[in-house]
Every structure is written in structure tokens, then in C-alpha cells.
Image (cartoon, rainbow over all chains, first blue to last red; front, side, top):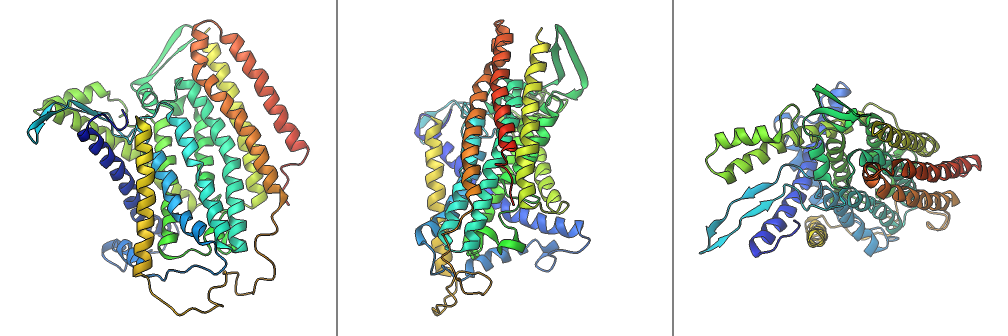
Length: 385
Length: 122
């Protein structure tokens, strides 16, 4: 649990958090490359293809360019807010993502090292196991609104301020529909704990309905089959939360130059970008977790994987690590798919107008999320009769 | 204790970000100061008004409505986690109906808000 109790465990858990954060930062250039190649593919053009094979070295070239950019602060800026905003933009993404379980826990047997004995330990393939996982993630990721306001106010530019106001108003408006769409999911699993939710989605589709047990062996027991409407609402609102097209009114370059990051360039701009991709990663991870079985593998149970791993490896620690690896791959495939959908949608749908955006959030998504909540409660109650 | 991990990673990221900014400021190019260059970028036109004076009141209204509705939604969370437990102890009907009453007030609030044009943007 959490940070652990002795030096070894605390060190490993600390390193694990750092690795999760660095992997997220590391994934951003790759996603940017994927986004540029993907957009080129969708728009029937080539995309970056000059620097290295398939333009892959473009990532390094971009990093060098960011680093050599002049450090520019406008005269009107408030320096503390102006510098703090990009740093704070990194925080919500990584802190919230660390709470998502990415695989089964690894059990490590007792072993000898540095002349003393250690263990046994259980390491979770997630930053920390927080009992109220969903509430924590929602709370932390909504702190991103402060980053926008800090950047907008700190730049001392009226376009930045307008962009920041729009972005924060949009973020909080869509947070209502986001929060409400999850109520149905919480009701379905009866817990806030993300690990318990994943484990509840194991095995074939089965549920009790008015005293009868209904089983469908050809389908996995995923949340999407119980909460299809919630899945659509949740995924739509996360686009607005991460300021991605079709809801990137924060940027709206035809009206606001570049929105809240007009005055930012070089590495400071890059850090906002990392923050935006961090939000996409949380959204993709949560989509996989709530509606697509998390790290579970369809048609294969954890017990079956454990049996196979025990026959393939000689030690119990090795088998446990292999099981974790296989489940991590399953999680990663789902996760990567939703990241791709984010990119795909960006190059498919046009941008909303601001009044349309607010109307859509308050008058369409919110009532549908309410309807989903009431319907779910009603069906759960009827099914228990 | 998970909180230890959260505090640790927040401090780590803050230091990491500050370090990146410091590195970028050292490796970045230098230029001579000129007042026009350091004006805020507003499409080349000199700013005629102070930048932080006028903000549409709609944003305040949106923020207030958000707080109201968000608190109401947070109230539903504990209800949602324990709904199945209440059903298994035979209190399902009571808990369901009380939530419907709560939601009716919520829906009335939303309806009133739409009706009073609090959500109209122009």
C-alpha cells in the first residue's frame, strides 16, 4: 500500500512514481509524431518525413529547437505566475494517472541483498492505491483549470486572459456532465476503488436479473455493455476537459491568437503541451478501466494466465512479474487505442462555436447524464427484485 | 500511506519543471532588449485599454452555477457506492425514492436555469 514501510520498499515506490511520470513525459513526443503522421494520413499528405526514418528523428529536432529558443517574458507579465503556470501544468496529469492500476500486483519473495534479508513484498503496477480512486482522479485533474487561469492572468495579454476564461468556464461546465456520467458507473460496481472495478469486469458477461442469472459467454463482462450511454458521455466530456478539438475553444486561433498560451514559447509552451497530453492519457486510461475491463484480457482469466506463467518460469517472483507484464500489455493496447481515437477525432470534426459548446455541455450532455443516472438506479433496483 | 507518494511526486514534478525551465533559459538564445518587442502579442496593434479590466459577467455566473451543481453531484457519489448495499438490506425502495426526490430538485434547478436564460451566450 502506498509508500511502504522500509527503506527498500520506499525507494522502489518512489522510483516507480518517477518512472511513471517520466514515461508520460517521454510518450508526448511520440504522440506528437503520431498525431502529425496521423493527420497527414487522414488529410492525404505526407507529414514529417525528412528527419530520420519516417520522420522519427523529428522528435529530437523539436526538443533541440525548444531548448534553443530565446527565453521571452513580455513586459506586462507577472513573472511568478507566468513561470509557475507551465510547471503546474505538468502536475495534475501525472498525479492523477499514477492512481490508475495498469496491471496485476507483483509479489516478490523474500531475498538476500547487501548482507541482510528483505521482503516479501507486494508491488502494485500503479503509483499508489488510493481507496477513493475516482474521486481523487476527478479532484486532481480538475486542478488544471488553475493552470489555465495562472497562464492567462500572468501573461498580461488580453487574448491570453480571454482564452483562459473561456477554457476554465468550459472545463468546469463539462466537469458537471463528467462527474454525473460516472455516477452510473459507480452504482454498477458499488465502489470507488479502481482495482476493485477492474476485477469486477473479469470473466464472461453475467448478471442477476429478478432472481434469474443471465450469462453470455461470447462477451466479456465489460462496463460498456452495462453503461453504453455513460461511456459515450464520459468520452465526449474528456475531450472538453483536455481542451482538444472539437472543444479547443481555449485556443481558437481565428479569434484569440493562441488562447492562454499566446505569450509562451519554447520549453514553456512544450510543458503546456505535455499537460494536455497528460489529460488525454488519464482519459484513455479511465475509458479502458471503466468500460473496457482495465488490464483484464477478454476470454482469459487472471488464474489462467497465472497457470501459464507458472509453467513458463521457474521462480514464483518471475511468474508474478510475467503475469503483470501480460496484463500490462492488455491495458496498453486499450490505452493506445483511445489515444489514437483522440487524434482521429481531432482531424475529423470541426471546432464548435463558444455558445454551441456551452449549450452542448449544459443542455445536452448534463440532462443525458441525469437520465443515465436515474435509469441505472431504476434498472439496478428492478433487477434486485 | 498513499498521501506520502502523492506529496513526493508533486514536489518532484515541481522541481523537475523548474529545472527544465532553468536549463531552457540557459541554452536559449539571447537578444537585445527593445520595448516594442516586449509588448504583449496582440496582432501588432498597440494596446489601447488595460488588459485586465473587462470580463464578461457570464463567466462569474457560470462559475457560481458550477459550484451549485457540482456539490449536488458530489452528494450522489456516496449514495451511488452504497446503493447495492441498501438494496441487499431491504432499504432499496426508500433509498431509490429519496434520491429521485433529490434529483427532482436538481432537474427543477437545471430547468429554471435554462428558462431564466442564465446559459444564453451571445
